Length: 111
Image 1 (cartoon, rainbow, N blue to C red):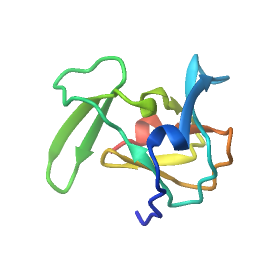
Image 2: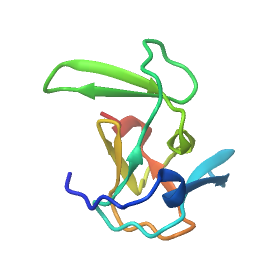
Image 3: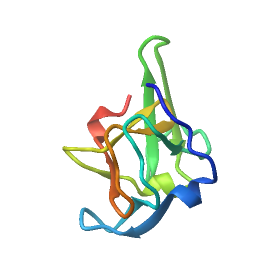
Image 4: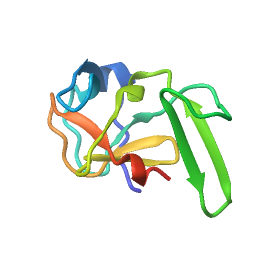
């Protein structure tokens, strides 16, 4: 996926707020264009499922890996019409995202 890497810290680009989808969510502080880098899902590698665990399968390498989210991206909620997607543990906007808009992913589409 091509991207424009936005400068600054993740906390300058996104925030946690109340979500109409479920509990808390991750929201854009700035505008993102399609293809923009939003941030990296940070956290310790884990071998078991649990809260805020993101599983990534690398089909080319046949490797399954996971991280327990420790940054703001752990608040991402699911949508059937998501506006962001992961490439490994890096999150990119899949379409334009306006400031204040909730950033969502398709939980089934993470790979």
